[in-house]
Image 1 (cartoon, rainbow, N blue to C red):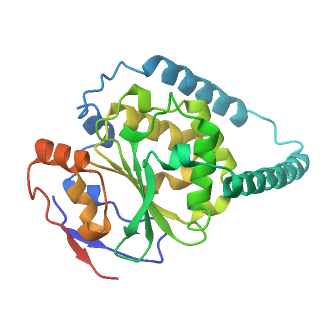
Image 2 (cartoon, one colour):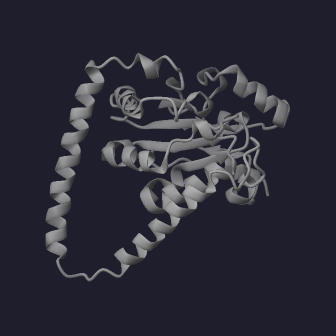
Length: 264
């Protein structure tokens, strides 16, 4: 049964997904349709190896004796301080280094605000040359852009439209980025929209929210088309490249979704 209402609540830690209005089909089943032509078998060997490692690691952790809890708490506290110091060093570098190599690509930027007045961060996967870019500078640019924004609530819209394997960063790098970013990035992220998902994004989302970031699992929403975003973000506040809207119209047609948002 289709639910055309979309209620906003600034008190919730995560938003209701516009995708929830489409019915009860699973995201993984939808991703297997492979909207962007990505074969479910491509990019799979490395991903499967990493998934198995994480499953084995989770089993080992679950079997670990409960002795030494106090020592573990102390160790984690020290590690937390070290992570904070590392982030602050990266932030200082981000503020002084020349990052035009990354900023000039235009793959990551702020685009207006959503219906609750929260900043909207847009990431265009097709324009991210993961195999031909200095990933350390990419991390610095991410920090430079987001650090002043994540002090309050914000949302991210990731467009997977027409991406290829050349746009996919390694699992190791994704893990590194997530471990570097402090708690405020996760806490104040209220929604992460993945537009035009594929099998790859479904598998990555499952892995990431299972082993790395279970706290944000409810905040991640896969949307088959741009118009589904309009429940959360008005059209005039969403600046995206023409290739995304052209692909969306060619794939989904015109006016395929009629959002009925409820003001907060």
